[in-house]
Length: 415
Image (tube, rainbow, N blue to C red; front, side, top):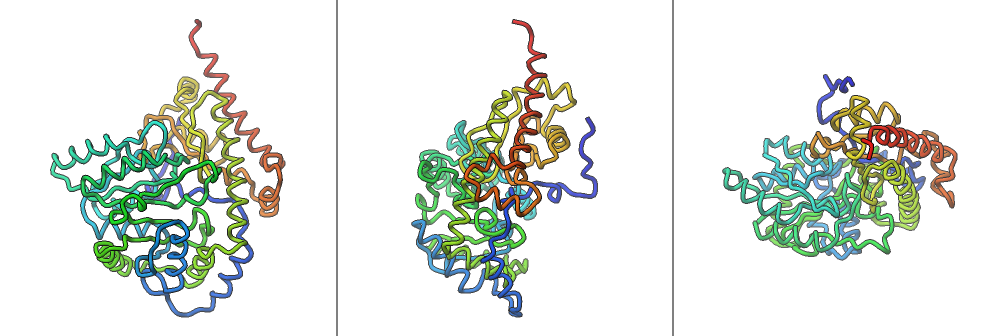
């Protein structure tokens, strides 16, 4: 099978964006953006007082007190991670797999990146023993590990690591003197919030954790890029924030006034925002469960999705059937599924996984179709899986995976 030609596109430019919600923009949010469109002043680096105060209130409601002086905002989470990594210096450790946008930010600084395996039951956090061994090895080779990035609601695996796994990773990192960036972009997209325990590392090691949240995860459409960071509230945290603000200033990474207004409004969590978020989470929980059922029903593997708008599938059990179609690695799997399904299907190598592993992230947003009215109907439908477009898309995906299962069964040796 011919591999995708990325010439002229670049590895980062052709990488996967955050899974989109596939839903119309909330009318009240659009009105806030329109009202702020006439503002001629630029917000200061790190965000204006109103936005930082809204972010402080958001974290206060989640048990993480922080004044506006401990918060910074940027047009997306990427500049915030880059600013923190630049301010800290040293090498960076990431779980494998991890969000596709983490590593490019670090590589821009010329820093070394080391991936650490995750526990068997979840993604998002490194296995504590593997983390300690990796730190020891890096130091023995002359490296200087200083930063660990992790996530408590993970892209790409859609899992929420149990509190004990988070605690073990945080304890190991703190013992080695590492600072932690906790990417909590998806923390407000839990599929079953009453049954899922999410504990962030900032509650475990307040002086060692900077929390970053891209608002495209739960609150804003991708067309309005904004993210916020909460720094430790001690003196070292204030110094880190000051150095990060210098980097953001040098980059010119300031949210535009209309985007800042939208972020301020959304972080205030008015009733219409929380109602939309709850409805969207219910919808994507249904879609993700059905998508996983199609994958697992064909004999492939996927952890039950607990957050976000995606499923991380391991098609290793179907390797023989895929090899018959010329698919032997994650890039070829990406090419094959995108052509076969007509949907985004980034391979696991985009997320730091082994390219020889047949893993892929499948998103739920495209299942809602191109028509805004149809997407809106699915949002309010009592049974969203019975929406005609959703039903057709899921049937088409299930048929494609069933074909692979049937071919794999034909290729099984006789018993």
